[in-house]
Image (cartoon, rainbow, N blue to C red; front, top):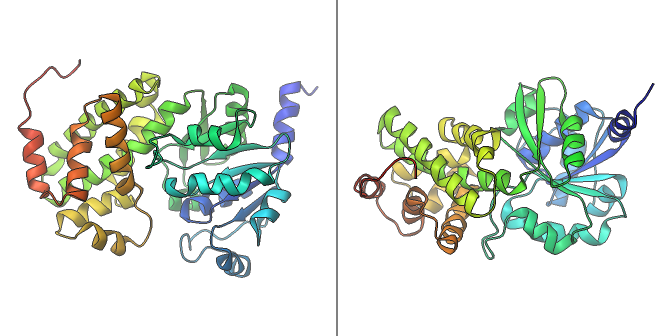
Length: 345
């Protein structure tokens, strides 16, 4: 006998998901979804590249080790991708998120739902992605955010991975988590969109700090201290914005922070290593060759923290290194010279 919940899951498994954004993360998610559901459509912001993806059946630039499953289709246009889909998953950098929603909004059909894997505050407004989505789409469109300790390459290769799906609609969060889950991939559901998004926004900034620290040769003690105190900063900001404190001890807080601070697959960590080696911010970004989300996030996080009157000394010093040319060693000295206070306040 099929229950109503089972019927909903079966319907979800038969629906088509369009992934908007064909960078490394969007491609990895599309490849994964095509492995677990019947049909997935991928479209990117650079339409000429779609011809190459359709011909090669692999994203040679961003994810060459993950050939496309048969269930993954390449859409030549955004209009075609949305028309072919029942639901959307947006995977674009934070600075392109609002513009992407503006393009998508007039194409939506009644009942369509939108999720995103975008991380970061909007620089101009200090808004989190769910707030931007609400402004552009209104409150009637169901929305969700995907986040957690996930490197695109490992997801593309099908290595064991866990992440979190958050939506204010508990049923949508659970349904999407079930849809994403499969062999070697486990998704957990949450209703704390604020906490999940704050974790995703701030961990990139702190990962730059970890790269600077390791690049200067400060060792494991320093790295762990930075991660631990960085988590405290992340938690303070999140709670001030209305997040649940426990969220930051999960995959999208501590988990994602540890991942990006300790592994060189992280572009943000590599950016920090380059700064420590004497590269300028522009030189470091050119070397990496992809968007380093933590660069813009450093400015946005600090602006939001000032507005909320939340102390984030690590994030503040990282911002000074990136934008004011502060020598990394002086930034560390400034942190070590702060007045002594209780660890838990």
